[in-house]
Length: 235
Image (cartoon, rainbow, N blue to C red):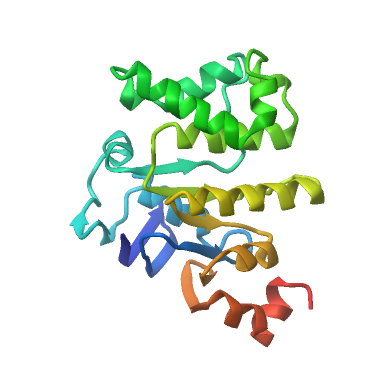
C-alpha cells in the first residue's frame, strides 16, 4: 500500500532523513521505533505532505504521491493523528469529529454513520459529545484525535506517539483500540516511544537511528533482538 523509497529530508542545512526506505502492506500494523530525534515523526510528516523530501519518492497504491498536497493525500485515504493530539480546544467533541469529515461535507448521512461508528469505538467521547475538547483529559484528547482522523475514512492511518504522556492503564486501552481499528480493515503506520507495546501490536517494525533505518524485521524478532532490548526495551 505504502512505499517510501530512498527519501532524504532536510530542515535547513540539517539532514533529518538519510535514504529512508520502508513499506507497509495493506492490512498490516507497521511500527517505527527509535530515540527522540531519530526521524520517526519526520517520516510520517513527509508521507502526509507536511514536509517535502529533497530526494526520493513516496508511492501509495503504486502511484507516486510525493508532490501531492496534504488535503489531496487525505482524499486518497492517508490520514494522520498527530503527536500532541492537536485538538481544537474551544470546540466541542462533536465539532472536532465533524471537522475530521470535511472531505465528505456533501454526505450528511455518511457523516452520521461514521460519527456513530467512532462513538461506538470510543464510548467516553459519546459521554462528552457536547463538552469542549480543551476540558478533556489527556487520554480522552488522544481518543478524540484518533477519532477525528477516522472520520475521514482512512485506508492508511498514521499514529504519531499515541501513548505519549498517558497513564499505564490508558496506554493499554489505546493499544487495544489500535488493534480494533486494524481489525476493521484500516492499515496502520505507528510511531511510538513505547517500543515494547508498539512491537507487541505490530506485525513488522523498523528501527531508526539519526535519520536512517538501521534494522527491519518481524515484530517478534525485534522483541527478541538483544540490541533492541538494550536500546529500547529497558533490558
